[in-house]
Image (tube, helix red, strand yellow):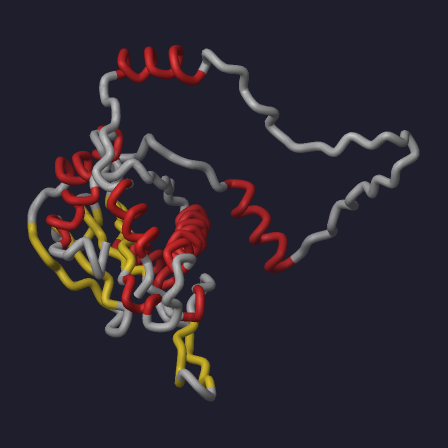
Length: 250
């Protein structure tokens, strides 16, 4: 219903080519990035008056949950080198449940009960689904799984070592082989369009994915796991692997 611009953006961003060879990447950076001045790292307003008011922010005296959260936030880093030790299934379970699982329900007068999660979602519609490509999780057979939120369980879609497939769907980023598993986020768009039928409905998917991605990274960090995020993906290969249509779920 009237989402022509969203459809155009969706089609234009699919299956983009990415450079893979280090020499090609270096040449591209030198010729297309370093050839222009780097923009300022931060924005600062310049006041015409030297006496313009500036408020120095005080340091907070943190304790309890606030101190623990600040510590996890401070440790969060993007990781691309991993240990060979398998990840415990209990850690993966906690990561999935805490990031994507339901924490409760809220009754609304007009739209009925809506699900609550640890991350916000536009209209509490939660269109994002999580799939797991696992190859180094203790007690879990290698393969492709869907996290069933309603059942709080993994449903296996296919069996086998999917490391090569993981690298290919991530546009050839070979370092992914060293991870223990890969989580793929998809969006079930009809959940959003049911309530929000305007063009800006598409961008709510990115907001939801961003919230979930940060929650994922923080929970992983708290467990001693090294998280990463990548948007360099090959959409058609992902959809084929997960057996989704690329239109209602992508």
